[in-house]
Image (tube, rainbow, N blue to C red):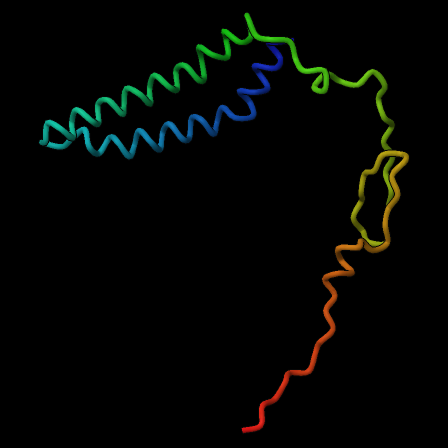
Length: 126
């Protein structure tokens, strides 16, 4: 539902938005104590922009989207059939989770391409 999606969105990005707003406000707050009219006016505009942006982003828009938001994309809806997951243990003590149909490769092709044989350095005769 829209309420769950709005709550998950706030849980995912809400702290990042709040951290960005606080750091921006702290950077602008130094200008509030300036004696220059131009700097003081600029600082007030920036501070109000940050405060209004946080209020809109963390309070107003999530409420409006939970009330009037669009339906989720078809790809975002949970699948009708759930895949069973099994735990596959490898030779290492780590436990890896794979779906039933997945195979565990012994060595990936990418890892093989990283193996470089040492080449002898060329010497110049002077």
